[in-house]
Image 1 (cartoon, rainbow, N blue to C red):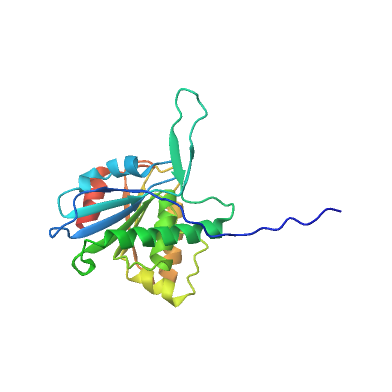
Image 2: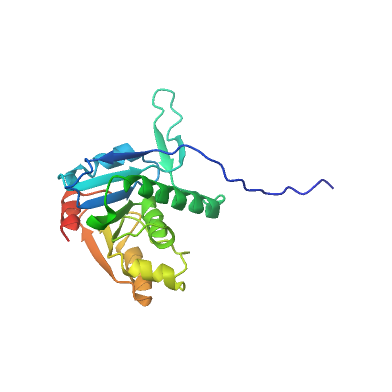
Length: 223
């Protein structure tokens, strides 16, 4: 019989990137931290949110720490990123929560936090990412939007600190009525779980699929 294989974990330093849209300054009133979906890149996702760039908002798009090729085609080697997989998932969650905290610290070097509203928006896989960051990170999130994505079912809502952070985050659930992944039934289950823990949430359905809708985005920003 051979020796047993043992799993080990070792924290390492690595370089992560994020993209921004807008110019931080005295006129900045809102900072949006936006997390892309599975297989997307931050810069491309940020283009979908350009309608928000009105001079008062600073948009910050972190990128998932794991990149991969979306296609094996030799003529089109497109790249996407992921926030996590089921493999070693708890370590990956810890890593991206610390990463988002680091982005937050970098952003609020030149910006007075007391003068702005922080809005965390996650699309698709990014919805669970911003949910965990809001609940477990060091940053204070004023508004939380889950767009076409799930609230993480394993997030422990018996912890008062977690629940209190979510209660004060003005949570919104945005989804297309024809979304093949996040159906109205899935959204209803999410909303029921949140409200069972006295976490208020607003539902904003729209006529569309698994996509970011510019008109709805404008309406969301005005709430």
